[in-house]
Image 1 (cartoon, one colour):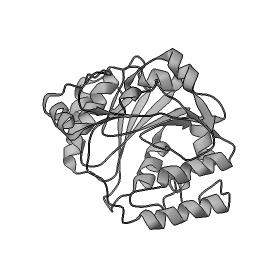
Image 2 (tube, helix red, strand yellow):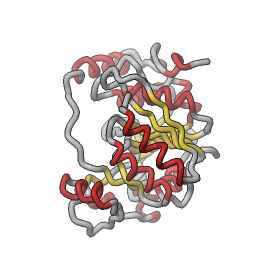
Image 3 (spheres, helix red, strand yellow):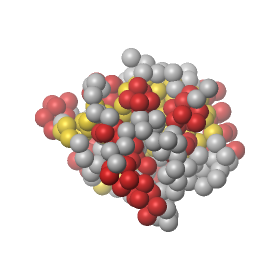
Image 4 (cartoon, helix red, strand yellow):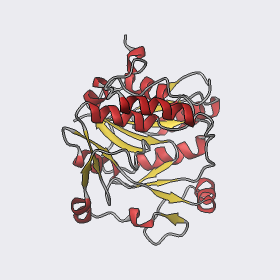
Length: 262
């Protein structure tokens, strides 16, 4: 099964480079890496070019004009470029456990999308990582929150897998699904702009289409670098879109992946 790893980013090339380096250490490589760039300046472009010069990995830079926080549209544009059967979504400021992709593929199951968890890295350790490029961690490393999520165990993962239909804990920084399921609901809702709820609205439509959630713990581990909180100015508007999707049991959004149809 071919897999595309889609990375969202915006003007944080130092963090993006750490992500890309952690992908080079994977036990299984993605067939393609697509960087969903929401309008970064040329520093990000240079970062990607420099990485591809020395890496055997296939990297596609999917860029759109900077017109504010438009992560839904950015992801849709990246999805339209994907040539794979299976999609893994991450953010451009996470460092991946070496079995991250292997774990997502191992847990892939028809009728489900996978929701992984994360370990949070504090500001001090994040600064150190970005300055000396040391991105090796363990359960005992200092500067970690949600420390239990750093334990990699196939036994515990099988024991604690949960299959549900709720939007609690939805995070597109660690999510995977079959591309066909995404196409069925027309991808992410481009009407959601600004921070918040684009991931939950996407998942609600997956639920409405018959897809359930598989929560995976102790596998598919990622370490999330510290960053300042995004503006919540658009949250009320986005929550209204989410509520409409829930109320009307919507499966497809009108303004989604289809805008990139050839």
